[in-house]
Amino acid sequence: MKRWLSLNQKVVFNSEKMETKRLTVGQAVVEFLQQQYVERDGVSQPFFAGCLGIFGHGNVAGIGQALQQNPNFKYILTRNEQASVHIAIAYAKMKNRMGAWVCTSSIGPGATNMVTGAACATINRLPVLLIPGDIFARRNVAPVLQQLESASSQDVSVNDCLKPVSKYWDRINRPEQLITALPEAMRVMVSPSETGAVTLAIPQDVQAEAYDYPISLFQKKVWRIARPRPDISSLIDAAKLIHASKKPMIVAGGGVIYSEATDVLRLFVDTTGIPVTETFAGKGSLPYNHPFNLGAIGATGTPGANKISEVSDLVIGIGTRYSDFTTASKTAFQNPDVKFININVAEFDSFKHGALPLTSDAKECIEELIGLLDDYRTEKSYQQEVADLNSDWDKYITSVYKAKGELPVSQVEVVGAVNEFSAPTDVLLCAAGSLPGDLHKLWRTRDPKGFHLEYGYSTMGYECAAGIGAKLACPNREIWVMVGDGNYLMMNNEIVTSIQEGIKYNIILLNNNGYGSIGALSQSVGSQRFGTRYQFRDQETGTLSAGNLPVDYVQNARSLGAHVIEATDIASLKVALEEAKQQTKTTVIVIETDLYKGIPGYAWWEVAVAEVSEMETVQEAYKIYREKKTKQRYFL
Ligand SMILES: Cc1ncc(C[n+]2csc(CCOP(=O)(O)OP(=O)(O)O)c2C)c(N)n1
Ligand SMILES: [Mg+2]
Image 1 (tube, rainbow, N blue to C red):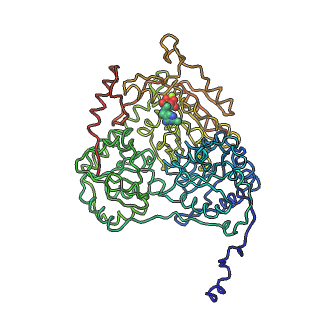
Image 2: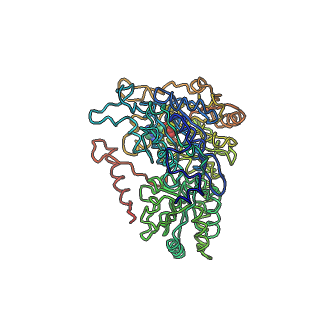
Image 3: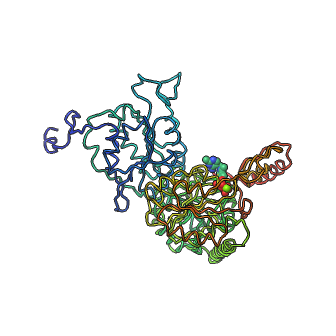
């Protein structure tokens, strides 16, 4: 043992003899984060782009002070902590999870503002590091401003709300706990199967305390993003299932894009003739005009995708978590003998629907599968059917994109104008409302990163903040945020941040004076759009029906510092899009759209309907609901 030690002088077993650096906890965090790198396929890059946030008493002297003395680690002041997280999510999504931001907040409302963002990140499987301040670990001055007191424990703070929405959650009560907590936080953030929101709650006194940290904590560390290979026996079984299948299909989810598997997917499709359907996160897996691309699947899917999923005997899910929108609330797959193969880096997802699990990286697995399929090819007639469905749908898109000349314009006409104006590598960004469904069906995606939909959590208010994150990740792409009036009113404040930072993106604000989406949903459950219009209250009927509210979106956006253009019809919208592109600062185009003009859907989405009611419309809706439910299936 002695001899071994003498040969390895640098190995120190006694922590007393470690080379150390005296830093506050806040300083140690910032120094550590700057040294974290990720590497995939031989390309290495720093993982953290910087820190977004808002200071308060919980973080100003700790993380705040550390950020000031480390100007190389960028700090961006935002307007709302939830929005910080939205920016971080959009960035990580555009970076295919190879980059992330830290979000810092004070104690209390700043921290709980991040709960929604954390849930959004975790559900979408996107990495973000949250560092909320926390109440004094020392406790002697409790209760501090914003402290949630508990009569049953002193070890509770509002940060505990972040536990269920975080993939890793820790509270750093002593400075040395950082030494083991930080690598754990990194392990989870860079894991393709585990990633999501990671929370390190750090009490304000602890953030400012100094400790002698081992210098090895601050050495450059490169985390390899592995491409785990599938189990070979399962892979052989998968190849057999494909060989036996007459009507196989692929459900391409976000994992295809995050794994950068789009080229190999295309090769797989070209060699096998297996058609592709796309989830919200997976849209862009194949270009829209590939003859084997059936487009959007599920509740907001195309007729072609729904027709094929109804009869398919083998569904190959790649990087999908099978949300209810994808499965049309478990009604999409009706072949009594349907089988599933799931290629997913997360074991949890790969076992869904009783599938043959190929727990592995999408790119790696597809490559290996191609090697086992020999000359397998779907029948010519099936390929022809798919190609016809693709071209029929494209003709339909052309017809609905065309402006009809009626005012207010329809939402679909706006989608058409933006799609036709945008360049292939531009980014369309959206999250909630009636736009996501229209975009899922109708957007002609030409680039794997061209379609950015946050539809895991469908967070109202995501869009205007997320535009910043998308632009930070892809400065050379033009970002087109499409947002409804409801979403815009929920969170538009980050326009100010974009002006502050000189980060330019475009917002197309579709004002239909209320909730087109939930209004239509309300109607479908028999509730006649109750409480979904932005109208004055009618004092006689007590309903929101006495004329549109006079919200001036043009003035609103202008007051935040944006360049604003008002469009009244599709012709003026086209001119506005050109003007927006020329601008160097964030530009908002406001256009009024029709609340009622929508396009039909081709599959069901389960939303519960009242079982009893005196309202006939509800009774009728309940009958339809019961009928639809008969198609729901379990896959075991
Ligand atoms: C934070 C949040 N609250 C509520 C909802 C439910 N919801 C989804 S879309 C929507 C209305 C969106 O309104 P708008 O942006 O005007 O879009 P439109 O429905 O008119 O297309 C609501 C209330 C949600 N997704 N997120
Ligand atoms: Mg609206």
